[in-house]
Image (tube, rainbow, N blue to C red; front, side, top):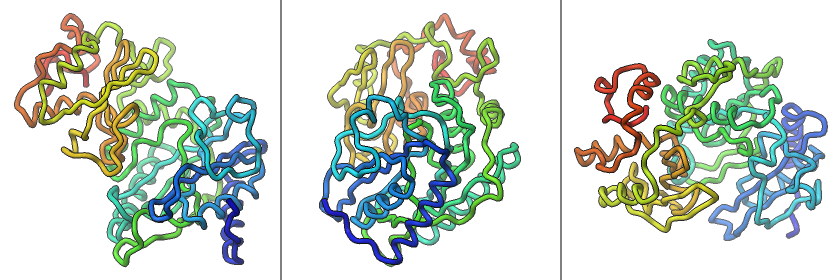
Length: 396
């Protein structure tokens, strides 16, 4: 594909994008520009480019945006010597690709993204929804400042606002990712407009100074250009101690060495009782709330995709059942729930059980956690099981 020509105004935006990439990057970083088609363009497939040249990355981002694509960049740099990058041409865009960078292709944590958006439906946000997102962003910024967090870069994403915090370059390890997930879900409870899904290392964010074209361009919900609102005087890093402090407020526990543990990483081998047949039995008990699709497997993980989201009571827009979408997920020592929609991404398996009880007035007959471990669960919960708002055996 021959990219569209850039205008004189476009080159002004390219300069601003390059300046932003310079601010957030370190020498030698490899950045991925990733673009997705809008349904209005009639195009299919994902476009991508890996760049060591920040100027070429900025030029490519503007070319892709002008082609009507939703254009993003990886928050964290790509490993230069991994299998993913080994056979790719650097500093050259590809207009149709099958694969993009995954979590294991990330070199280190460079940025933390706090994305606040008061509108999650089809189309861009209204002025009122943007104003609400702005108030949420300012409140979250003040809350984090009260915990010692430095000032972030503030970006108008077109639909909402991004607070971009500099990470301290820590290595990408699972326990840190798990803790960040718990922290974001904790913050979403305080700031509902926050997207709690931006925890995994290969996350992307919209390239500033490109147009957000979600849905049709209308007077009520217009397309808007993302733009940088503010650079801090000093873009100081958020250290892991800042994250730990927030993790303690979120109830993250520690291991024997004092290192923070998320609920996902906690030792649960003795708690889980349910198996694959038990999950199918559980689903069968709630035919009006749960409809099972085709079960899929990946290693020792079993995915039970749901035809529609039980929290919405219907399909989400672009609902695509299957692994990684709206599903109950069974692992050897844990069970979880995942919904791909931003509206429902913060719900857990326990939230699902609460929903089923609220709508039917009954808990599942299928045992889930072993009853002999109730004392351990109560200790972790911080209250006797009989005082909790869940039936015996259900974790907080």
